[in-house]
Amino acid sequence: MKKSWLITSLSNLFIASCIGFLLRITQFYKISIPYGNFLHAHSHVALLGWLYLFFYIFIYWMYIPKTSKNKKRFTGCFWITQFSIIGMLFSFPIQGYAFFSILFSSLHIVCSYYFCWISWKNISHVYSIDNLYLKTALILMLFSTLGVWSLGAILPTLGKSSIAYPIAIQFFLHFQINGWFLFGIFSFIFKILKNYNSPIPKYSYLFYFFNLGTAILTFFLPISWHISSFIFYILNSIGLLFQLFSLFLFWKYIHPPLLVIFKKKSVFIYSLYILFILLFSVKIIFQNFQWIPEIAEHSYLIKNLTIGFIHLIVLGIYTLFLFILILTFISTKKINAFIKIGIIIFTIAFLLTDILLILQGAFLFMDWGNITGYFIIISWGSVLFPLGIILFIIGLCNKNIILLT
Ligand code: HEM
Figure 1 (tube, protein in one colour):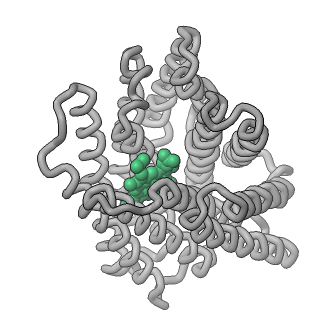
Figure 2: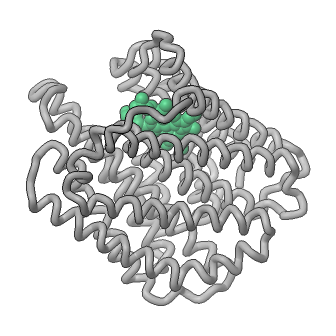
Figure 3: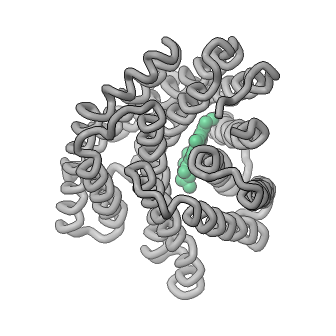
């Protein structure tokens, strides 16, 4: 794995978390900033600069033969993508959604198409379960971008106040977060099992079917927030049922061999993995509250719940798993105190802020008002994110840290 690429994507996470901290602190101290513009910068840099780029690095590293042609293509595409992230980082706070930010976002999308194309060409001839997941992840990534392009048609015709506008944004976010990234993570999991000579877990194809069904069917929930329909409620509920089946299959057939691999690595990696699987299960169990129609209909109105839920997925599940992946490819004796303390601080920050966000959301849902000290704890607790990430980066910069191939 290229260390410079890894540090670049982690630096994007650091920047996104600094903006996240700024957003929380300005809410608390009532400081006036163009909040919406900074929010765009935050979500774009975090999703496209951290998660996307890490997936890019890992796919290149694990799946692509390192021919000189590939090296040139992937390296060029990586740095142009990073250039588009820097463009978004500066253009969103200054002008919001306007000429330059749209230009840089489009550049990112074009780069992602090129990335898909060159990756596909390299993986398409080999059939395996991890490749199937990877291909599906790439297709879902392409599919999600339909949401972004449709905005170009919706804005001049129907306008921002039409229901098509939020649905298009939800479409992009849903198929990125519950499609591309989720299938990407599963593909990495199957790849690790394969690399450690573990047999393909039983029912892996059924697991695939349930996950794909869930990704498609649960999109009816955000639609139902704008178009009330009993059918959408039923379709989302079937998606939730599929997800429960897939969780069962994960615990029964995929978790045991994975646990053995991480246990052999170190106690630290093993503990992080246990936290990951717990958070993964908690997320799925939480989502099942949507069986209660009142919650399905109104949950999105309580911002704390939606923001808490998104961050549970992107930080508690995806980012945590990506940290585990990084550690898995460092010689365990070399994992230094900076790396460990950085990850511990990050994990504390996540648990503290996310539990508080979701609890506060539940308080609002029950009409119980605010939790005492909520704003001060969530604002200052968020400073732990950039602190933890910078320590992790410093630890990785140590020249003794060599990423295994
Ligand atoms: C993997 C990392 C992260 C990703 C992918 C991510 C993604 C997002 C997304 C998609 C939104 C919703 C944007 C919208 O409603 O338009 C959001 C909002 C937000 N995020 Fe993050 N985020 C990440 C990390 C963080 C961190 C570390 C912090 C805290 C330091 C943070 C603080 C916030 C805040 C305060 C909001 C705004 C809530 C609001 O006012 O609506 N995020 N984030």
